Image (cartoon, rainbow, N blue to C red; front, side):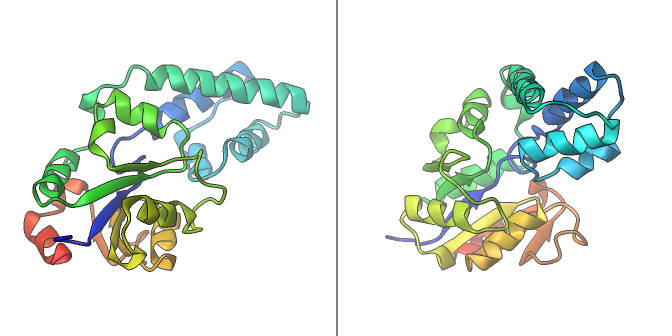
Length: 218
């Protein structure tokens, strides 16, 4: 093997931005229950499970519902979210992603997706990236959420690479912590103050230069 290094990418906020679709679906759900749900309030749902998200939302609206009704609402919300996802195209790939993937392909470096989303393969297919990834780890493979390193450790295994040779690209602090505890190199995409635990931080994927990548893989 010429190069042992491998990359693992988070999906949302790194490859594409599907957070806006989650927000629209939650907002519409709140409106249907008779209250509003702001983008600020939506911040509380970041990295939180669907069930817990609904609890937070209902808390905001001070609404009490039966377990049965909650189940129905969760199904409804997911259905609406998937309707948004089904309209996605390659135009939704975030700036800098294609350039980075092309660099990895040119240097014969494998890369995987490591996401908690069960919809990850569908999203990658919609934006035309599914066939380019060497491995996919999604919500169907993992039992523990980030900051547990499980998702990235499974990714390393699927890529047949030792964890310490893996480089993780993440936009959330829980993901950075998961990468660090897996003894992987962590690259944060976003705010330096929020992602201060990452080995490297860039405001966007666009800022990652080929020189930087070259040094990282050598």
